[in-house]
Amino acid sequence: MVIFHPVKGKTRFAPSPTGYLHEGHLLSALYVWASARKWNLDVHLRIEDHDQERARPQHVQAIYEDLEWLGFTWQSESVQSRHFDRFQKKLEDLQEKKLVYPCYCSRKELDAENPKNEFGEIIYQGKCFLGARDFSLPHNLRVHIPDKVIRWQDLRLGIFEENPKLQCGDFPIRDRIGQWTYQFAVCVDDIEEGITHIIRGEDIRNSTARQIALMELMGRETPPKYLHHPLIVDDSGKKLSKREKAHSIRQDREAGISPQELLGRVLFKAGIRGVPSPIDLDEALDLICLIF
Image 1 (cartoon, helix red, strand yellow):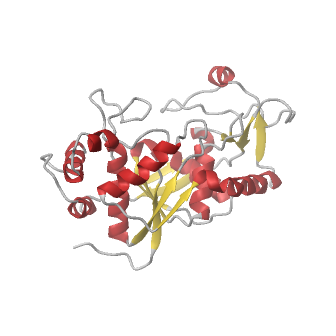
Image 2 (cartoon, rainbow, N blue to C red):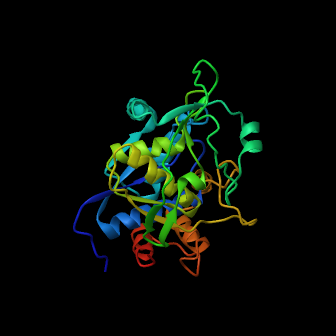
């Protein structure tokens, strides 16, 4: 029997329209909707098209079609590119606090002059923070984050203590061509859309402390609750990726696979069921509710 949390909150499913949804997205959706069922949350569908160079209209339409075909419903929705004004406002607020500065470092300079963390990310050492600031030169914008430990609890994995200053350093919030970065866009939207629970894959777990730190700088005192779920990987052990041309839900639909067959296959690949037999969405959600 599913136990409901007495206070209504909101979670979100936030795919980017840079390709078609695949099995990894479906597993994430199952965790999102199972969490909503378990904790009495509304689900917000967010189309994360901040990367306007790679986003495609056909992929936006496919997200809606694939989710509806699978049987998912949601209570609200948004498209990032329709709300870039909220990003500009948050940027101006940070600029007033003198927390944003231009960075002129090229990718080659960043690789050569900065150490990397365990995930291969640059740990920016702040070269441009104290330098002269000429906004006429090509630059991205970085946010100056505090040197402090962020303690947060994952609802599945337990407690983490991380210092974003040591983990990644000051990170970009807008790139050289004026596009908003993932880290900045999701933080602004999670604040503005009232997201209380963030359910996502383990591959994003290392972004959590820096996002909490950024949200604090933007005035959010109580961070969302987080749950990071396991991933489905390919035969080489890598996570499924649109960049790597992962087999898409759209391809399964065109091949005549039923939603129940696809759900069963995904739960099997995720190690949640011992057989890849068909399963209804309601039964799949109840099953996932039992494992976290």
